[in-house]
Image (tube, rainbow, N blue to C red; front, side, top):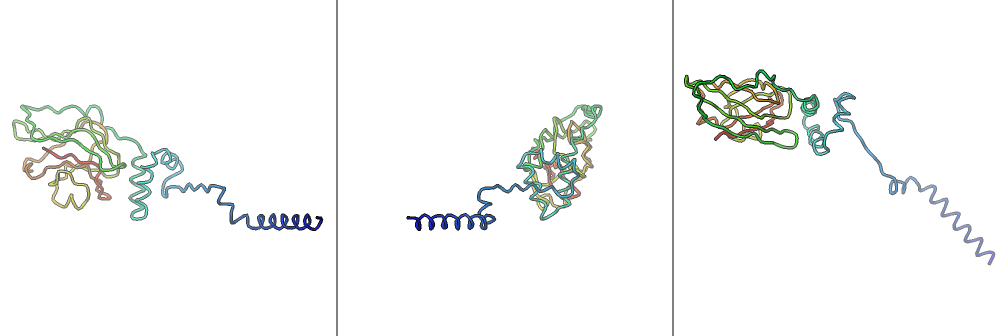
Length: 211
């Protein structure tokens, strides 16, 4: 009986020794490893703001890093910088004589990061001049955004935008109604889309198909 008890004690001791020395191997099974990597290129203050974005948006910016880290950093930084509203005094409808609606469309989202809303309407005046007007407009902020007229009504990629487009100039603000002059020589039967385009990185932010 004494021998059996001694053998049991030795067995338990050996098991305890084995558990202690093998602890590094089975420890991960019981302890979560939390990884919180910073977004490269952002300041400490920007990191904190980035962490408050919805997780799916954070994931989309992070997915850009392997292919173009500079683009990912600049787009994220512009989004975190906040809105750039058009001054209230510039949001009013411009003076028009006998305005006729030539075409109109509604801005739509491209993805979770590049989003737009509001209407785009082209008016033709009695003197044949034309104005493109955005109303109730909002788009994700970004670097070097321009307003394009495109042949494709709803282009989503640089390839779909192509090289045949009309650049109406820099976007005046990412929030607020605004007006752009459309050159009289532009054939609106050919150019059927309004595009908010990031020239710096060739990224489509929002489109409005004209009809």
